[in-house]
Length: 77
Length: 309
Image (cartoon, rainbow over all chains, first blue to last red):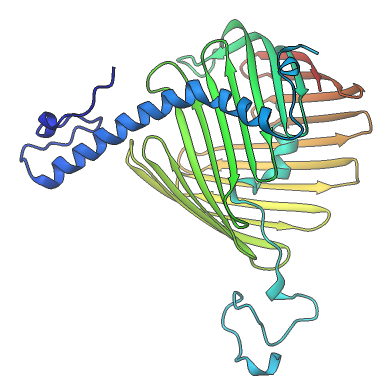
């Protein structure tokens, strides 16, 4: 479960590249924060795409002209 | 109007004072996109061969929207430790897909029974700017891939910026230098094994032939040549060389586009001969047969299929 990145993890090099941030300089902690936020948003985007992309195509398709019927969507002919 | 302009310096200025009677440098055609540089060669030389049964059913609900169902049964190759042995596992899966194809927006999505999904989006933001996205998603962590491209099409050039996962950033540019010759280059930077690369490409085409070449700092050098012998027949040949690992592969292939069928075949210097036949049985019904014989690894793959719609 991707928890929201918290400020407590600022000092530890937690990302995949694990930068050696032994000094707590603000630039490296901002970089860590940015990396954690982008990782979190990418994970959410991946889940959204997995569940939502094909329904999105179907919704856009059913609204296009000429509108097909729901029966045509489900029938195998 | 032509007398007022100073002599030109590069070929990119819009108004050239001296218009060549043969070549009009101010009016060059737009080149093919960088990734389609080898398009004609790969149509003949890399036919989509498969193993086992394949059945595709595409149902169009209206002009733009369609659903497709596809069943594939057959052995699937699993990567093995030694390059000589081939391990295959029989699998069967069903794939459901939805396509929405509009001149300005194209959305293609596919989902398989084993949880893998693929999604492709292509949107024309303006006349000249296009966004493309391509993603292959899997349920296992770290097995998904995605790539975003931003393409800009100028009057006689194209530029593209790419972003991918694993922190991949790339850019490429291709320019028409004469009506037949286009030259291009690309740079990319990968984050995970920190590597960067640069490559150059050239493409020369006439009505009857297309020749293209590509060199990259990853060690790849590829050249190919396609000759359109007649309306129905085209022949292609390809040479690929890796100058770090000193491996070279050459292949020769053909593409016969007949009225009711299309046959494509190729033979390789690795001892691989492959062919693909697509026969149109009637309107909307296509029968496919594919064969790939790898004599070096002793791996023979045969497939057949039917495509409806």
